Length: 215
Ligand code: SF4
Image (cartoon, rainbow, N blue to C red; front, top):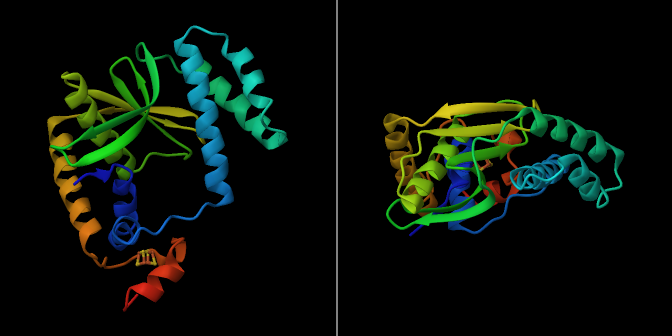
């Protein structure tokens, strides 16, 4: 059995939500914020690929923006272009959305970017949280298995604050994430009720309260 890496984020939000999504097959709902995040993500990945190929990324941005008419997206795209200009590549080639999986680790996922041998998680956020570091580490473990090399560094690119956070991927952190994957897998198979769930922020609140007695 393999769980998707993104469930680490879900688990850190609420362990019961893992069961709703992975066990019962419910889907997280899209919001306006998540839609802007998706567009920011796509623009940033396209700019990164162009940069990796040595293309003119300003020109690339003009091409990309033909798809969007919203002036807010143009403003956002200009900031992303500036961020990408200021953020040197960690290595070549640049690969976007690389599919990875491991039967041994029991996870599957798609890492946003790989620059050389460095995995990069791209987040539409202004700061990195524990789950972001754990998710990045899971991708590093998958990359290590695929390439047969030790991955000691990873990055989290924050598209709201336009910062790159470098994360040292220590053996201790990797061990922690291997154990965490086991916990998340368990939560996907049977409901794990959290002590203080953040229900007021949950997009599956209605479904949860209907399907899970006591919540
Ligand atoms: S409604 Fe509350 S308990 Fe249910 S999944 Fe969402 S956060 Fe967790």
